[in-house]
Length: 243
Image (tube, rainbow, N blue to C red; front, side):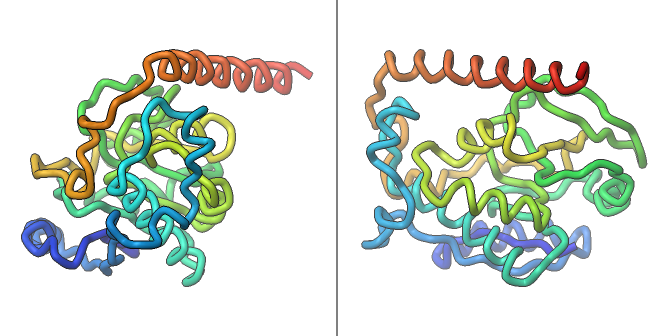
């Protein structure tokens, strides 16, 4: 399986830590050079300030925009190289034992998929088991977990993600939650094959997210809008199953 690691050139310590973990599992990887949030043209590569005011309760920091664009760069790599799928990782993760079963389990998935989640910082999101194999479970989420540090992206998934995020207004993981409702087919694998290290966030180098003031009215409005989005999708699925 092709492994793509998103890493800033100056984040040498993070790259070294990841390399040590990868060597333990004989995992080779290619580096996708991350896009700095401080780049002069970063604000002109898809981030919509206007849509952000409606779709998210905070302005995105330069680091969040750079993170989003870095993942789009990884998705573009998958499409350009015509990969059936690839593992896309951020450099603050470490390998866990269940990584060894990942290839075998993916081969046994007998339904179309675009995105497989492989990590959850705070494991609290409920999930329904689709099937079990090799000591791990393939699951579906009602709502995709926050975070985007480890996932498998299929060719079709990369195409869809590039299409639907040509213009974006939310942080990457929040945007993925919305897309996973009705635009991409998302699964997860547990126990998770990757764990997040407790490292200082590279995203916050370019503006601390906690220091950005938010609009509580927009936050509540978007929570309600997301629940309505989920309910609409549930109703449509119910109708199709019964007609």
